[in-house]
Amino acid sequence: MSGIVAGKLAFVTGAGSGIGRAVCRILAREGAKVIASDQNSKNVADTVATLEGGDHTALTVNVTSSKSINDAFKSVIERYAKPPTLVVNSAGITRDKYMLKLSEEDFDQVINVNLKGTFLVTQIAVKAMVEAGVSNGASVVNIASIIAKLGNIGQTNYSASKAGVVAMTKSASMEFGKFGVRINAVLPGFIKTPMTDAVPEHILGMAAAKSPLNRVGTPDEVAEVVTFLCSNKSSFVHGASIEVTGGYH
Ligand code: NAP
Image (cartoon, rainbow, N blue to C red):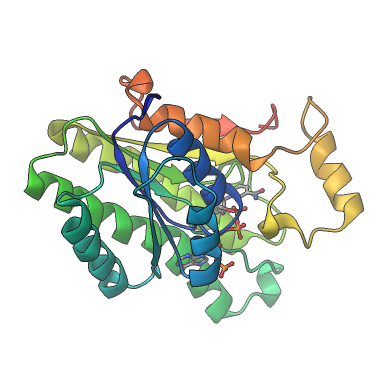
C-alpha cells in the first residue's frame, strides 16, 4: 500500500470518536496499520470496521491505567511482533465549571485523562520502541488545545491539563532526540465532534466567529496535520506546537 506512512504501525488513543477516529481513518488511507484504542469498546470496533486496508486492531484501553496500557502493548507486540512507532494521544475529556464551583474530583479526572494519560502512553510506547531497537524515525503526536495558550472561562482544569501537555511535549523532545523519536503537540481550535455536540448553537456561532475563516473545524482537518507530523515529511519538526484553529490564536 502506498501513502506517506505506508507500512508503519500506529497506536491511537481516543480512537472511538471525533479527532481520534479521523486520525485512524487518515493514517489507514496513507498506508499505516492502525491499532485503534479507546475506553469505549463498541465505538473503537466501529472505527476499525470503517478503515481502508487490512491488519488493523481495535483495543479497549483506559489511558489513566498503566496496567491497561501495558496489557495493550503486550498484545500488540504478540500480534505484530514489534511495537508501534507512531503514537497519537487523542483521548481527552472536559468537565467544565467556573473555578469557584469546580470539584476536586472534576479537576483530578481531567488532569488524569488529558495529562497523566498522555504521559503514561508516551512513556510505555517509547520504552517499548527503544527496547525493540525500532525507535529511529518514530513519531509521537499529542493532541493539546489552543486553550492551553489562551485559557477559557469554565476550563481552568482543561486549560491546565493541555498547557501541561504542551510543556511535557517540549521537555520530552529534548530527551527523545537521541533515540530518533520526534514528538510534537497539535493545538486544535473549535472542532465539531461529539465532545462539542452539547455546545448550544449560539455558542457555536461565537466560536466560529473567532476564526477569520468564520467557521469551526472538522476532525479530518486536524487528522491531516497529525498524519503529516507522523510521516517523514515533517522530519525536522520536533518539540513544536502546531495550531489548527482557522486562525484563532
Ligand atoms: P471525543 O469525540 O469526546 O473523543 C474522545 C475520545 O476519548 C472518546 O471516545 C472518549 O471515550 C475517549 N476517552 C475519554 N477518556 C478516556 C480514557 N480514560 N481512556 C481512553 N479513552 C478515553 O473528543 P474529541 O473532540 O475528538 O477530542 C479529542 C482530543 O482533542 C481531546 O484530547 C480533546 O481535548 C482535544 N481537543 C478537541 C477540541 C474540539 O473542539 N473538539 C479542541 C481542542 C482539543 P468516551 O466517549 O467514553 O468518553
